[in-house]
Length: 114
Length: 118
Image 1 (cartoon, rainbow over the protein chains, first blue to last red):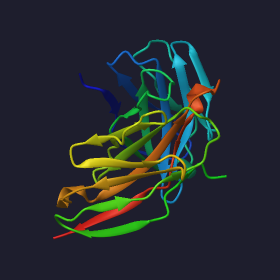
Image 2: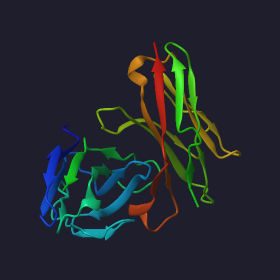
Image 3: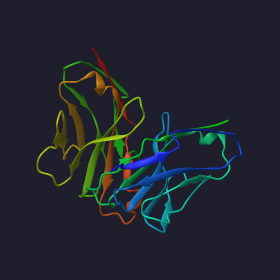
Image 4: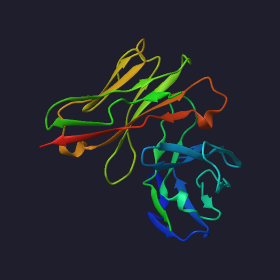
């Protein structure tokens, strides 16, 4: 099992550019989430999905879109990059949303917006 | 209000000694799970240990154990025989049950940076 994979590992964008961060998991997990991690702010939930075709907003969704067409993949789209979106992005997955369901994280994508 | 509090922004420990990282949580839900993650300087988030609110015994995983005091709402991580490779950020997290909004029921604390000294 590869677990949760993310690509790319690093990315530099110019303001206004768009891009998609890829996330895939091979554990047949229903739940997937995107977080951003900023110094002093901890991990903040951007968007999440509780199954294929079902997505919802988290704490900081503005400027990001998601879709979930398959159980395995959960891409995060930046529509028009802004310097405030410079951050480390983590994708995570869990079997479900029960209290016993551990979230497993991808290796992260470090994004810089100039 | 903060659901997870980690009051130690940074800690130092001598190699081979034990260290306790504090975590207190706030929930009115009787069913919840507590998780600890390690984030080394390489950046990945590594799951360490889990404790359920109904578990009778404290969780243990190798050198990691969880000192779970339910009445005090604390779930401290104990690392025995610290190694240089234990230097990292450590995050406490909680998943609450009884919530209809399952996708958003996983919350993290601010983290504690542990430095192991040779």
